[in-house]
Image (cartoon, rainbow, N blue to C red; front, side, top):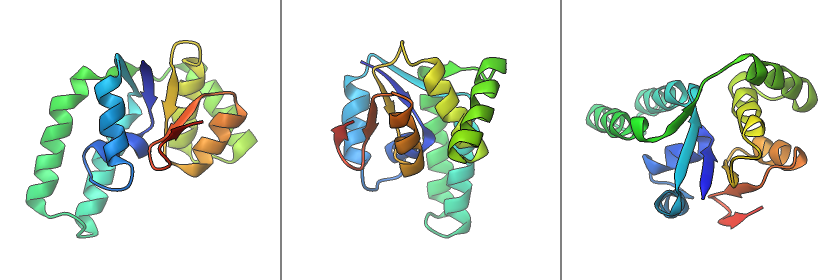
Length: 145
């Protein structure tokens, strides 16, 4: 099974919350885990935000960064290119997505014929992805859509 992970779902591998168990299950079954190169930046930003909000402490922060750095080379990375950028601009216009969300969805659409599922928790992305014909798994709801 080839899975393209949005950061909203991937982060659940590192931060235990609703959907984390399903993310672990999916990753264990996956033949390939694919991410956009922007995911690395988004994950770092999320961990830093959690530190600033005091949801995690400094030790947790450093541990999470280390765990992610160990895992990241094992994910397949999709480089941001002109086609993804063009897709992203159209998706912003069509769905009023945030910049990085439009890049994630634009990347998933580029890979539509190569992936089995777009794994995502962000509800706006779930809805837009479904509308665009992607097969979606939202780890929080635990079912393929």
